[in-house]
Amino acid sequence: MTSGVSPKKIDESWVESKLRSANDSTECVQTLSLWALNHKSEHEQIVNIWLKVFKSADESQMVVLIYLCNDILQTCKRRNAVMFKESFKKALVEAVHFIKAEKAINSFKKILKVWSERNVFDEKYVEELNSLAFGQ
Image 1: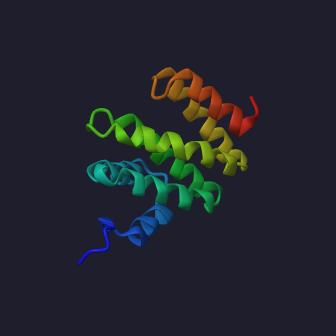
Image 2: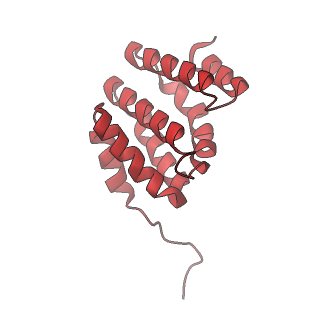
């Protein structure tokens, strides 16, 4: 007899550990991004774990997580995993409130510019993130 709750298909502690130990090398970011995209059916859980780690990350780890988010978002369309856009769209509204350190601020500003230029998100949403994060 089942409880009606479906079991999680990915190991949350394993994902959390990988996110916490990630570095800013292109190889590391792309490997984690590819893993996430290959587990697109678990996109909400993956993004929720990303947000959990992001909230408690130090400045350098926060930058890595911003790069990872960016890589997933820019690659998801080619990988038929556009559901990540909606999941990250919700999480980013919360995540921006945790960006306080200069290096993370600068990285996020650059990423917002890229998202605007490449139409990763519509201009209104990018402006909303910019306003929430930096009051601009």
